[in-house]
Length: 414
Image (tube, rainbow, N blue to C red):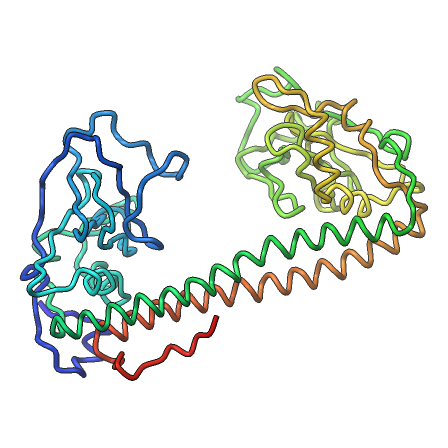
C-alpha cells in the first residue's frame, strides 16, 4: 500500500528503499505499576509529561492497565482527529491504554528520524486517507492499515544525518516563533503603560466614579429569570462570557422573549452604556452600541450609565483597560465562593478625571495607537503561522528526500 497524495506526486527522488512501517515498528502492550509519570501526546510537542490543569481529561484512577513507555518508543493517538498526535518519547513513563506504544527496530530505523517522519504533512494526510471517520468528529486508524503504509527509507546513516538537521532547524524555527508570540503580550503591556502615562501627563484629578458623573444598575438577581424564560434567538442577556476584546458577542441561546425583556426594562442596556463583569472575569467591559440598545444586563454584570456632559464613555472604556485600574476592581471585589463586585465598590472606583475636551483628545490618540498595535499583532501572529508552515514543509521535504540535508540551509537566522 503506497502513499498517495503529495508523496505519489513527489515520487521517490532520492531512490530510497521502499519499506513498510510494520517492518520497523511493532506494538508494545507492556503495563506498569503506575509509579512512573503519565505521558500524553499532542500535535505541537509530540510526547510530553502530563500535568494538572493541562486542559485534558483527568487520567483514570486505576493506572494498572496503562501502557509502559520506554525512551525511544513511539506514542500515537490513533483516535480523535488525524492531526499528527504522534512522536518518539524522550521519557520513561506510562500512557493511556487507548494509545499505541510502538517499539522501533534500531537496526532499520533511527527513532528521531521516525519521530519526524510520522509527524510530517504527507503522513498526516495518509492517516486521514486510511482512517475511518465516525460522527461526531471521530476518527480511527486501524493497526493493519497503519503498519502497511510503505515509505521511502534512507540508510541509518542518512536517517541520523536528517534527524540531526531537523533537530537543529526546527529548534531555530521554534525559537523564532516563540519570540514572536512572546512579543504579542509585551505590545499590549507597553500600550497600557503609555496610555496611563499620557493621561497622567495632563495631571488628572482622581475622583470616585460616582462623583465623576456615573450611576450603575446591576443585572436581575435570583428568580428574576427562570430557566423556562430563556428562548432561542430573542433579546440577548449579556454576561461577562459574552464580552471579548472589548466587544459584546451575544449568545443566541441566552436570550429572553420580548414580553420578559419588558418586565426587565430597568435592566435594559442603552447605547452609550458600558457593561462590566462583576463575577468571573471581573472588570471585563464593553461599550453598548446602537444595535445593542434594549439588550438585558445579565445577573453577572453591572451596567454603567454616564452623564455624557462630564464623562466620555469611550474614555472610561480606555481607563478600565489599564491594568492598574482593573487591579483596583479586583482589590475591591468581595470574595466568598468566588470574587464578586458590588455596585458600591464599582462606584467608589477612583478614575483619572479630565475635562471633556482632553477626554476626547485622548480617545482619538488611544484609538489610533490601538489600531497600530492591532496591526503589529496581526503581523506577528501571521509571522508565527508562516514559521509553523515552513517548519512542517521543511520536515516533509527532508524525510521524503526532496531536500538534500548535506547541503541545505534553512535560511532562518535568530
